[in-house]
Length: 107
Image (cartoon, rainbow, N blue to C red; front, side, top):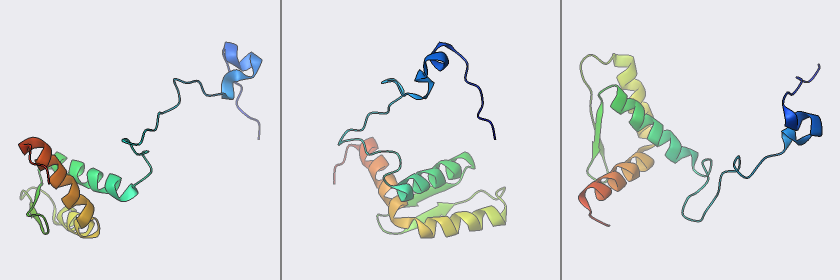
């Protein structure tokens, strides 16, 4: 299988495959890499999708409460129930951090 032909001035000199400093993503101690905690990313995705559908999710610090509009299909609601059960600790953590940032309370 032939490799695709590269175009541009960097292709002629063989620099097309090198990364520049602009392409590199900095990693600091305060900012973990994007792949460091896939469960937290999954929990954030679940919360974003729930918000997009009008589903409200709250917590008392331990349990999750989900308010779902009637227009959301039963299968969708059930999917969220399963995902929230699987990623409960991460979802609770995200909600508590957002509430702490909003109210200014530090725990």
